[in-house]
Every structure is written in structure tokens, then in C-alpha cells.
Image (spheres, rainbow over the protein chains, first blue to last red):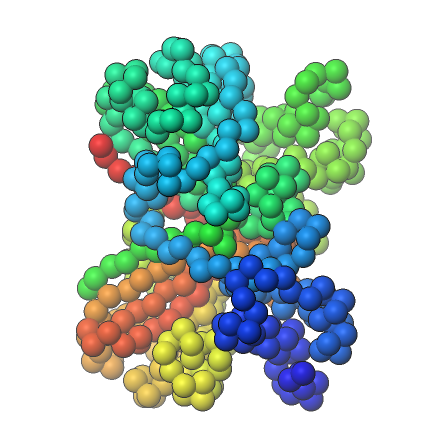
Length: 239
Length: 239
């Protein structure tokens, strides 16, 4: 293969370019599995460390994703969306974005959630954990927290059939004021990685969303962990 | 210390809460170094794996950052800024945000940059690599690419004293049309981590910025790698 050890370009960059070309040319199709790092190392006659580095670069660029214990795969096209539409997009119809309910409980807020929501740590909170899928592939892990006192009688079935914003407005008569979302890079480990079906240690988007009532009380707090090979965000200015 | 092995809360969460309280209460000051993982493990009588997990969670939350070969430190306040101001903020006065020039060269675009900028891979491109510092601490690693044909005679000294947008407009008479910036989570490795003074494998923000002329040609392409303990971004909607 086209690896030249006498060239000035680092070996991992050369490997990266060859792999990238195989992907962008369509030689390797979306969803197809890459040879193992050992196989690629034999193929290119370079160390597995060199191969690993090239693969990490291509994961970072969004061309590849790694699945726990399964291997490395070619990513589909990443959905690029206006970053300002993140909040409103999360109010899309549920039918288009199926969510799998992982857990639903009413518990004490606990230190962390209490701090975020301006509650006492023993205030009862509805805690909802869901996995958003698309084409039966995990896309985002979502944690939603609602003050139980404001949402009496909410059941798992309610959130299966209706959007949370619609429930707050329709079922509980709450006037929403504003929502703020904060983005961060985040490294998922263990169970979270497993649910998202990516390698432990992968970088994902973390969005924290705070929804306020017209009275400026926090009525909803959510955390979203979104695979970077599934979504990306842009902002634009015109001069 | 307040770790209770009979409690239902996982040990790492308990360790995390104790550490978080020491930080938020100001018991540990901004910039101060944490005890080593071994020392914390002895202190709490838990495994170093448990300590490591608690520390990663606190790094993810922005409370701590890890410095290569030095240890773990308490983060300063993270600057939270409107995500839409990212592009315009990068046009702030240079004096307020000192940049250290790492390299400046005129080279062939190469496959990757050519693809991003719609150039031939052997088109000459000015490649600029800089480190943005604040209070003498690295904050962002910035790569800027300019088509050499459009910026004749540009010198390292020019960019030291003037903003790139101002140079394009003033020195080279280019009418800017728009700029688009795309955000992604990114794992920095080796040299990049070293320059940013964080552990290899840490998650940072990657911003890619494309600046277009009024004629819709790409006149500037930049990549920014920004430490997540230094900046964070939000977006907001009002209902």
C-alpha cells in the first residue's frame, strides 16, 4: 500500500490519508467494518500504535466510530444543524425520534440535581433516563429531571406519547418562559458508553438544558449526551 | 472521611461529592493541586480506580483539570459565553488575548486543507499555528490557513500586531461576506495536549471556522482547540 517510510509525512498521517480516501471514495461503505488494527498494521507494515493514532484522528474527524468490543466502522453522514435550533429541535415530534425508556422514578433530588435546579436535596424529583435512537442505532442518552410537586401523577406512559414541553404546558398548565442550553465536550465511560454503543473513553457532546417558567423557576433540567458521529452544530455570521 | 461503604450510592459518587464540596466551598482554592490518586485512595480507603473515576467526572464537570506529568488542579471559573458570539469574539483586540506564534510557513495546501478550502492540493497556503494564552496559561491552540495568492507579502509580524480579519480587509482589500463555525468534541493527543498543558486524551472543544468573501470564496480556514475548563458556550430561546 501507499506508505512511504522515506517520506517526511509522519507514518500515521499517511495511513490516515489512505484510510480517509477509502472512505470518501466510497470504497468502504457507510456502516462497513474496518479490518482490525492488527490486520491494518500488517497491511501497511507499520506498528499498531501508528494504526491506532490514524484511527483516532479519523474518529475525531467524524469518518469512523468505534463500537465496544465489536470494532471500528465507517460513519454515516453527520447531521449538521444550526446550534440555535438545538433547543427547539428537541421539541420535534416523538414519533420521528423514538426514545427507549431506560428508567423512570420519583426520588430525592440529591446534591447534584438539587444544585442545578435550585431545590433542596431531599425535594422529590421525577428522574427519567431515555435513549434516543435513529435507524435502531443509539444516538443520544437523555436524563430529564422534573420537580415532582409541579407534575403530579406523571406516568412513564405520558412521556412515551407526548413531548415534555407539551405535557408541561397542556397537562400541568405551566407557562414556559425560556430555556438555556450549555454545550461541552464530554468523555463517556462504562455504562454510558455501553448504552451509546461506542468505546468507553470516546468524546461526545454534552448539552445541559434548563427550562424556566414565566416566573423564572426551573421547571425542567436535562442532560443530553450525543454521539458526535450523529450530530454536529454550526453558527454563522454575516458581515 | 464521609465515605460509607454500606450506602447504596456508588463509592466513586461519594468520593466525587466530597471532592466537589471541598472545591465549591473554597476549602481547595482555584489553582491548588489535589493530593495524588494514591493519597486520595488511602484517605478515603477506596481503590485508586474509584478515585480516578471520581476525578474524571469532576474534570468532565469542569471543576478540575489535569496537567501532564504534574497532577490534578482545581479549575478557575469557566467563562460562559453566547455561542453565537464565538465568531465575533475571535475578532477581539489581540492585546487582550496574547498569542504565541508557534509556526508560520507557506506550503502546499495538502489533501486535508485543500479539501476544506476548495483548493488544489498543491496550491500555496499560508499556515499559521498559534497558542492563545490567558494569565500565562494556555487556553486555545489555533491553526489558520490563508490562500497565499490572496495575501501577498504577509509576514509573521503582521499577524502579531493586527487581527486577521482586519488584515484581510485593510491590507489586502478583501470584502468579507460571512463566516461559519462548526463545533465538535475532540480528544487531544501528544503534542497538542502538551501545548495546551493538559493530559493526552483529554476532551476539548474543536471549532472549525470558514470565512467567505462577498464572492463566496473561502478566504480563511481556521481550527481552534479550546480547553473546556477555560470556556463554555450557551444558547438560549424565549418562548
